Image 1 (cartoon, rainbow, N blue to C red):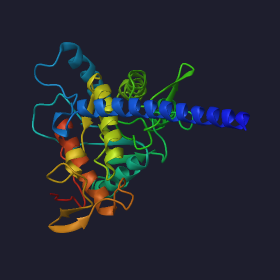
Image 2: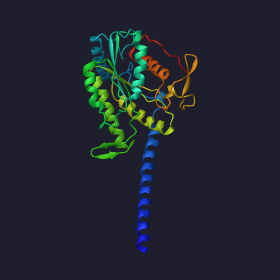
Image 3: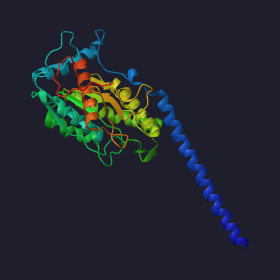
Image 4: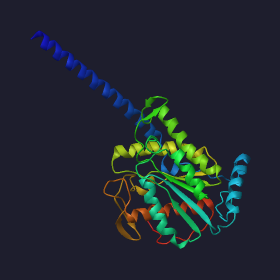
Length: 306
């Protein structure tokens, strides 16, 4: 009987130690996530790598090189333009990302039908991201897409699958840890620099508010990481969507007034967009394109939204 009691005590002690350890790891991960969330930029504070009249001379040189590549193909996207907006000309836009990237792409596809000179190439892939390169390696996979389409603008929207640990140099880095953050930014930078080096501008579309408060906090962390990578690359712009899709209290909403009617904009999973929501997202991104690149774009089915 004593042996049985001793064995039982050992089992219970091991289980207790495991639970305490698991609780510590979870608490540490949550603390890192919460700290990153506190530091995450608000949509109005999110950086846009758009040069001003006081832009550094090296930035102007870099942007001039991109503009030259654009003009040689007949595209009028121009981050340096100070004159009145012009027609976009003949341009190719490459969209990459996850299933939210597809949501954006479908909305843009419908709205850009009025612009036959704009070629929209959709290469988003569901279930992908930057923290699961074992499944799909975006810094590697984007290269042939760039080579094949020769884009003037690369639009990126991803992150909904990136709340997971990463294996870095043989060890596991926890989500939102210092090592994880650095690796994520590096992966984003690889996508950005490949695009810019090909002669394309980059628009990185931020993630929207989510129904689950926990999931939303993870998405805020990812917005912080991707916007930081964007801010360090001349020719790239970060386009926030968080406040756009939130209510006046900054909270998630399923419904919004679109074109004067109350309409459902988010899917039943609290993550993706409905047909109307896709169009709202596309309207926002196209509007940002016009402002950033000083062009006028005809939009079919443009949404008024509040």
